[in-house]
Length: 639
Ligand code: 28F
Image (cartoon, rainbow, N blue to C red):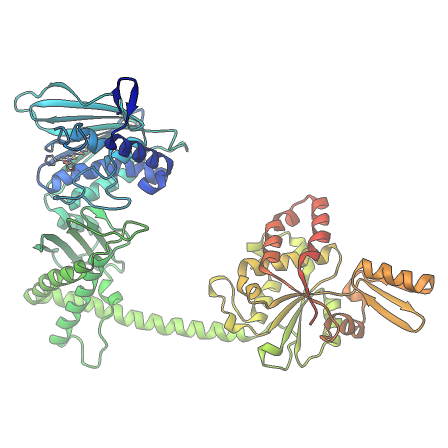
């Protein structure tokens, strides 16, 4: 690495770049190979094999051998031209060392060839090297055998010529690496089946190359060779289906971009369409896939109309109709593909949509014209699909309407209010039937609705929150509120401007309150964020002195008053809401002119949610302590 000078160590630009690169990869493997899980482990293999595939794409390599050894080290060997070994002009070291140790110097990155660029793909073999406990490369070219070994990306010495090539010996590159357990900590290992699937795919989309894969850990091996390329891939995918016509294949080059597609309809209801860019499986699709799908829909509609299979009054087949039963592969080769920034598996080049639409449209259109029988079979399939979809849509609308009606039936226990303007209405969620009864009698039925919740049921079931959703009490709460929950939550549906939790001040009451706070926090956070959730503040004491009665809400107030009134005062501690008669409940807790409501903030609810497990746990003491302290933590709001 560093050029040792007498007495001092100087790092030239190249070595600094290498050092920084290796450090960067080892510090944030996620940025380079997507993480340190098994997916990332497989990505190491794909990175190395992709470079050999690149050699195959330019026609310089016909065979790639991959071996997983018993110690989980991996050998990848190709019979390509061999990574160049000449001294790199700027870096003053072998091009081979540059490729193996400099980020993004691998493969054909940049000029010429089809190496994919950017992001997860094309980080090159140097990232694999950095994440390997050790790595060795052996290149056969220019008559010699060139070798170098690395440990965690650092070369153990310069590239050495370890021998001469025998006459007639093939050129090529061999990389052996062992992933670094310091990086890939979990006890993960390669999965034969996952790799087999990917190598099969690679062989399909790289016509004519032989990929041999052997796993010495289990003595299993597979070999893939598909002269028929993606046509064979479609045949493989349709091997257990009734096909409607032979595979339609097209392979054209436009502006130095390779556009290839293979299409075959079957009697299946599913769609099996795969898209590739430079042999990378673009699982999130992209412009090439969009081009394929839209051109097929357009061509099928045009043919159906032109041949009277779609009446003028009939609507066009939708994309869904023309995709049912479709098996297709679109594989493009592009010198500079742009992938979507995050996932790296979606192709973004806009020109590809145009080119694929043109190439696939022309070839499939011609196929339909020249094969009327196949065309009719395909269109009959689309017609059936369109009719089935229509019927399904009607059935679904019916179900939605029915369930909407159902949900409109409000829970029986709800004592609703007559005011319809949500901004003026309130819903009291009252714990317990007795308090519920008092609240129904004491309330102002014009703008106050009451929903008694049998909190004891929720409380004693010790149910986890997700199970509580199945609870009838909670279900009636959800339908009383009218918003739906979770993803289908819609604040527009809220039937009350204020939702007020009114529970006893004792341990159980606070427990139910926390349970409700947690429920709202997890399934209706917007209700809280938009300031609709409150907590009613019933009085703790009733103090009578001479003919005066006062209600106090804190111990502090109580002490002050008792001191003021002296011993003649009579003091009543309220244990629960049920101890108050309807008038008292109205006067002290529900009458807007002198009640205290606490506005719930999302932090309060989050706090409740975080401690929910403790409440549900068996440790009673911390629970008791929590409830008494926590209940005070929400803000006061006198309204
Ligand atoms: C086991 C994995 O990595 N095979 C590779 C080549 C061949 C060339 C090449 C690779 C230098 C920097 C452009 C040879 N001769 N198998 C592999 N085979 N890289 S990787 O060139 C890399 C150049 O970027 C090669 C003429 N042109 C290219």
